[in-house]
Length: 235
Image (cartoon, rainbow, N blue to C red):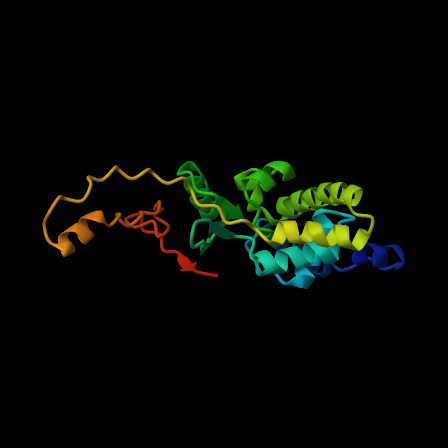
């Protein structure tokens, strides 16, 4: 009989007594539960902390530099794999409730011309392109950290050609991935306004000369009318 847990295989190899049928069944059930948890974890559906993130790196990006990548993720998303940030004058952060919902919201925002940052490292459009990640893949925790590792290494190699100190080179790369530049979507030009009327009271002339309040692009982050409620907060 072959068991999926490494420790049990070792015990069977060193024991002349095979495990009972019930014991083997329990091991198989435990292995199946662990497999389900692993799949949910990779899809970004479980809570994460520094220890869990380190385990994720070990599994999905072997050899990755744990310390700098952990620092990046801690500062950008606080280990939230389904976090979306829509840039603008006042960035809006949205905590998606599922991978599917996150992909849909981020895709809609991107189509609307918004600059969207996604996932554990809050990667923007250019960073996702450099990391080889699509919007959908960016929400997958395992693919996200693998792409983040590749992006970090590429930038680190470039930084080392400019800085002789390895620590300064690493610090500059971390800063480039943490200090995101908030970019607003292009705004529609306002219609030209007629000049102030000749004559009239001073109040009328002052009122007529005032420029209209600029309108920011809007996005239906609450998805009103679609039966979906989201937790929206500002960071």
